[in-house]
Length: 423
Image 1: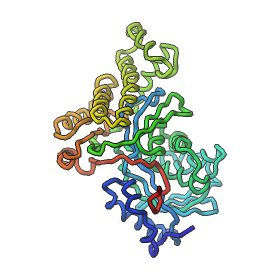
Image 2: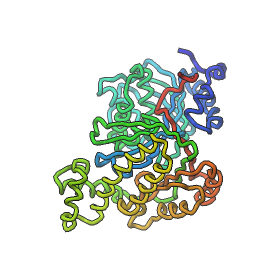
Image 3: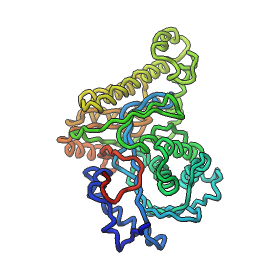
Image 4: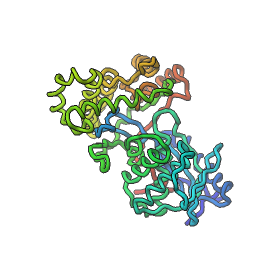
């Protein structure tokens, strides 16, 4: 096991092609992070690291609020990541140090849930380890220095990125790299739901574990179906824009969407909308108007139509049909506005709606939609590459450079970073 130190880093640095695969045209910007992390590991722990691991963020392309009712989503890994310089150890102790944060320490001899650890990174590490062990897999100790460029609060899943890097470290060192991406996604979801205390579906973790562009069908929550497609739209740039809305006190708004969808399903004899065939819903819809709120029925319509949009968008990506793809993204955004009704809260924050309206007047913006949960938060834009710099300038002026993120699709999910280009 070769040690990577400041003295020998240059000959152990990831190859240029490896960096391009991870970071696209931002590779040169990210390259120095590796040397800095290697040096920090040696300084922090008194010994060099042996490997680098990287775990991306993710975007939801089409499939807004479908996963919780066992629907379909088209999601992708993106070129922002949590990066770690790591060395395994034999004493069952995990130590993780990020710059400007205190050291995190977890002993595999003590993985008990503690109320006081809710919402902490320690809880996420413990939860992933506990899931591995309960599933009959191996977990072991390691030291890591980490750095993240996954922007927090931008809707691209910084917490899931952290969870998946822990899972991949366990997978690589202690399970011979044999575990499936979905297993590691489930371990990460378990950590977030049970130990961290945040309810979440499996979409975020699955997209990050898988890498690339994937349709994830949650008909079976235990065994979701995954269909991938190669992203070849090189003349499109992707932006996520944080609109400045306030997420506080929106729990009821978020909770009402799955609850109303499930109320429709229960009225027709199911638990979630996926239990009810679309033709059965549409045949019964008029009869339900006197017993269920109109918004619940509109949200159910969105669910069924969005599942079809996911399928069509996936086909468009696979066929390289850019215009068909953009059409589905725009239709998803329109349905979220009109039927799902998650652009703004009844309490008055209209930042997403206003941001989408502004984006519609920017030359070069080809498709736009709410990104993620909605009500406040982020929007997703697909932009013509030959207009991207100009669009970026307008967005920065309107929303602030710290709230505008130009992203690229990344084919690899959470992984050990190879030093040479693998064939």
